[in-house]
Image (cartoon, helix red, strand yellow):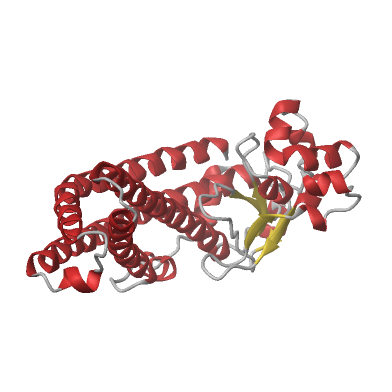
Length: 342
């Protein structure tokens, strides 16, 4: 699982690098237009409004040019993300088969003979790669519209507050950087979601061998407390692995035995994977790393006997759906006023 996770991370890094290059190229086009727009607003004085500026044809033309660059950037971002999703789908199908073979053991040729591949068209439909106009496109185009609105607000706010062009330019760059972070989050989340979806569909297509899966979180100080709490839990094939944005959790298949599949034992067969408690792996972290994951108050609770699983919960969300979240301190048992104030 760790080997496959590293391959996925390497591909993820390539996609994010392509996204950053696209945003850097667009910014080079945008900066001179931002400067012209700022100069026009400064000409209008501290009482400038977009209603006043919009009546100037040169301002309207600049806004149209900026909007066009950002719309194209949104389209490019969507295509980068779709390409990344297509690539990881094939990777996921190959790795799901390899994971299943490793999990059940025995002759690999026997696994190949009994393993079903999910039809590409069906998988593309589930992952959302059939056509433009998907929620993915709407997300990136909404970011473009938000960036235009942010540019207007930043310039007008800067002029009315008496800021100089350099200060306004810095604020525009910060806003643009925030939109890049949002785009990278969408790209990473959608790519990893496509990987998980393809893996899950592969396991479901082979329910004659696979009967469930175990939630596998990265055993590192970068993993949040919510994912540590989910690590090692068992789930049926009717359940989805709904991680939070930027999450990197994965599924370990739980297979039937060869006797259950074929009616007889096979030499070299493995014992099916079993659920486990994350505490043993968490204890391998140093105290500093454990504090990094839990924070001061939760670390004290952990030291006083609170189970690691208590720190996370699955909660619904309007944008990304149900996902693991760190439970608020007020929901945890045995809290003192000092803990709540932390």
